[in-house]
Length: 189
Image (cartoon, rainbow, N blue to C red; front, side, top):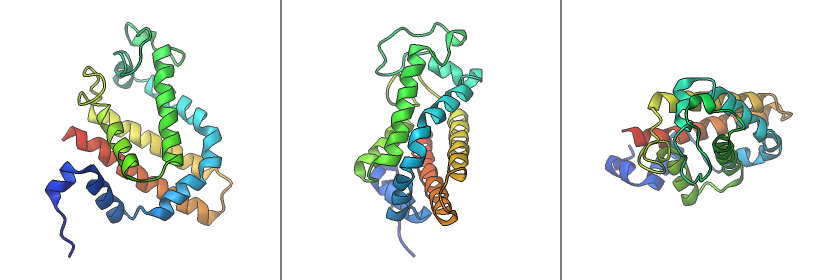
């Protein structure tokens, strides 16, 4: 039986990632499957981002988190959720971040810097990083991750990959999203 330093899981993001990756079975072949899918998903990232924000802005419980000034955004902020629209400059700013997130998932090495990135993605949705006024409830993050998973799995299922490559890619993204979800949830403990 392998001994795991559980205190270190909470303190060391790289150790946590390595544990999760090993336990879930996310390895180099999964990272390669995700990166190999880049030519298929890359051209559709804009569509993925638009669909994501269409959904996020269609519920007050998710839209309200786009009213406070986003960290790094210097333009005009909306006065309330009634002013939020896909075309609002702050929403476009957030869309750019989501676009970069997808590009990171499909184009980066899964190394210590990527682990740090996955951890920051979780942290920035809480008062622990970025704007202290932004505190996205855990239920909204879970809803977002579930929606994102569903959309990605749909895109993969519709791809021109052969059946074996499609299954490898579905499994790889599924494992990665579970790891990402853990790096979100850890900031809610």
